[in-house]
Amino acid sequence: LKQQTIALSRQYTGVAVRMSKKQKKQLKTELSILEKNFPKTHGCFQIVMANQEELVCRFVAPGGIKYNMQCNISPSYPAVMPIWITESNDPFVAQLMEELNSADEASTSASHPLLAKVRHFVSRMCGQMKVPTPAVLGELLSNACSAQVEDSDSDNNYDMSDGSDAGNDDGDEGEEDFGGDMFGDEDMDLQCSDPEDIGGDAGITDENKAVLEKIRMKTRQDNLQGAASGSIRATDRLMRELQDIYRSQNFKSGMYTVELLDDCLYNWNIKLYKVDPDSPLYEDMKRLKETEGMDHLLLHILFDDKFPYSPPFVRLVKPVVTGGYVLAGGAICMELLTPQGWSSVYTIEAVVLQIGATLVKGRARIIFAQSKGEVYTLAKAQHAYKSLVKIHEKSGWFTPPKDEG
Image (cartoon, rainbow, N blue to C red):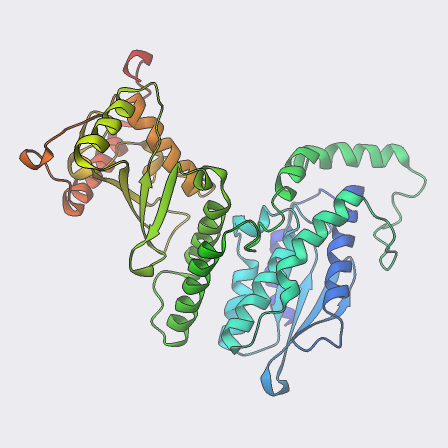
């Protein structure tokens, strides 16, 4: 355990940013919420000890089997994520420790990353042990956000001050300014505006909640049978992407729909119903609906186990178009869809909307009576995409003139 701590603590090296008052208050809030909701008497997950430097937790499995873990909190939290260690030799628990210590942007960018990590651990353990997930788990972040909005200082169980701030208001102001640049109020408000951004189903219709639960059950069953596809990181991220889409106003307003082919989280069909109403493509889509009864652009998205660190493969399935930066087979010529231009921070909704904008800017026009012309296929699209990547790896990318979109 000591060797584990020493090895993992290397990530603290070179970090000199201390918590500001606001960040200390955030940590205090997170610890208070955890201890309140998971006391030592809780039947599933227990907080054994909690302070500004250390969090000791225990998961109680069926039969009274206990799994202890320790979280070492950096003095630079949340700029530096906590280190999670365990004495357990269980392979699954060891794997979870690796997940908690990974640089997962969904939890590290959450408004309360410590709660996000705890939620991930408990959810995964409950799934593995086939026990119900504590109902309060989905409310952790919303509780933290509520406490932040109320700016409550009523809980004095923790003294977050290290003594260096006492009687030194100027020093605190300097810290606040520096911390504010990195973790500003604007960012925090944006994150807290979605109280379930660590995986809850708030704001999602019952129909789509049922889809999510079906996928969770299928994923859990595949894991137990050793038949899981993809990776844990990709699966978790795709679940969050799907939840965010189901909560999105663009989705709810009918701009686009999502279908998982064969209930596979790695294989999506997107129907894009709306594009710029002032564009020729919009007029073509109206005509397409009148003449062929089709009122959307059908996109096919494939994800691999390296997502979100590798881009999804996206192609246009139908209708067949000319222009719009659409290549043979329906592949799409966009830098952000290639390894050179992709970023793990891109959301799938943003990608879909950007594709719609790119089709319009590229003056895409629908080819009617397409049965006489080209038919888009996956094989053709993959071949065109591979050629595209090779060409731009050598020649780079450039921004076309405005008159070309």
